[in-house]
Amino acid sequence: MANNLKASISTMTPTQPILPAEQIRAGDAPLMSLPVLRPPADLFARRADRLLRLADGHAMAGFLRLCAAICQQQQALHDASRLDPRAALEKLAEALTPQLPVPVQAALDLLLAQDAAALSRLAERLINGDYPADGPLFAALPLLGAALQAQATRSVRQRPLPEPQSQEPRCPCCGGLPLASLLLRGDSGHAQRYVVCSMCSHAWPVGRVRCLSCGNSRDLHYYSLAARDYLPPEPDHQRPHQARGAREVEACDQCHGALKQISLLLDADAEAGADDLASLALDLLAGEAGYARIGFNPLFLPGDPA
Image (tube, rainbow, N blue to C red):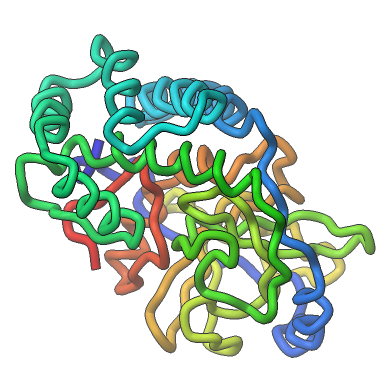
């Protein structure tokens, strides 16, 4: 479930900006007045359904189907009474044991054998994108992340929404790290950009062209997956979405951070968590090009976190 992924498509291709950066930056202030978005109550069921559809014909079909099974159990956790991390993890283990690879099951047994204090320390580290990447517990940590994500989503959905004050690199609801950014069409008809939290699944508004990590708005590049022999068309500003990908990575040449960008403008069925998992090859290629992922997806933990 972690670091044995191989990219089936072997190159990234740059995609043209929709508008000049200066023009989009001028809209940063109005974006900050947009509200935080709550996830739907059936978020994890929807994510599971999307993963199953994306798995058909995908090079990582087995991985995506396992993630779908995890998401189905996350929905059950979300709908149940609040549980502590151990109880939530035990629920996941009970439901998923027949589907788990042997190394994951062995690591899960060790994880469940940790005392309350040790498990709490692991959970706190994982929420902040930090984890032991080379120990016997590693293969089961995505399941701990899944339990924490389901519980955080349920908890924060019951609270009043905060007012975003500025472009924030962490979730204004729970302090979680980003999972991916999401493009959607606003009431004005123009694209709006939100960042989805890796833990509570709420989404907060950010500037359309601006690095979430360092605030840079100039040295940004957008890449999508393509075959080696792909030749991008010449830019056409009359049809700016022509050469865009529904799943891209925004790469910053100032801090060398990279954030996945999922476009509902180009794929109305896209779902941030599912489409991020289905495009992990893009993250690997971005890493090979020298860009480090901003944030993380709890269901996929690389073996060497930054």
